[in-house]
Image (tube, rainbow, N blue to C red):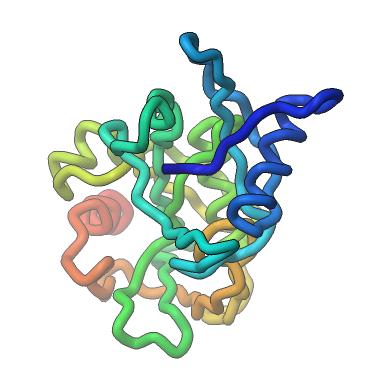
Length: 229
C-alpha cells in the first residue's frame, strides 16, 4: 500500500498529502499535482516528490518502506492503485555533440556501472525538449544547448532497444564550442542519482564506447550523419 489519510479541518489537499507522508513514512515531500478523484468512497489521489535523496528501503514507526518501478499495471492495496497510470512518465535521452564528439559520462567510484549519455524522466509539467535541457544540466552541468531534432520517437526507440518502463524519446543536441574535454559534476535535482558524481567527457564518435553496456545504434546513426559528406 501507499501512504494516505483523512483531510483535517482547515487543510488543503496538498497540505494533507505532505502531512500524511511525513507522519506515515517519516520523510519530507513537496506536492506536485492532483492525479484524480475517486468515488465510493471519495478520495483525492495526488503526486508528491521527496525533498532529498532517499535510500532504497527504510523503516518508520514500525512500517517498512521501499521503492517500486512505476508501471501502469502496478498493483496496490484497494483503490490506491487506481491512478498509478497517471504517473507513467515519458523519458528523454540526450545525444549531445561538440563537433564530431559525443558527450558521455561514468559514475565516479563505480566502474561496474556502464558508460551512459544524459537521460531521465520528464516531469509532469514539462515538454520533451524542456525535460531534455533539464536532464543534461542536472547530470553534466551543460546549459548552452541547441536541440537539432529527434533521433527516435517512442515507437522506434522500443524497436531498437526493446520495451522499457517508460516511453523513451531520443534527441540530438549540440553544445556550445569550447570548454574542458573532461570534468566531474555532482548531479543536481531531486532524482535518485542526486548527489552522485558523474565523470563527464567528450569522446570521438568514431571511437564511441558501448553505452549502457552495448553498442548503440543511435550513436552509430549520429556518427554516420555527422561524419559523412
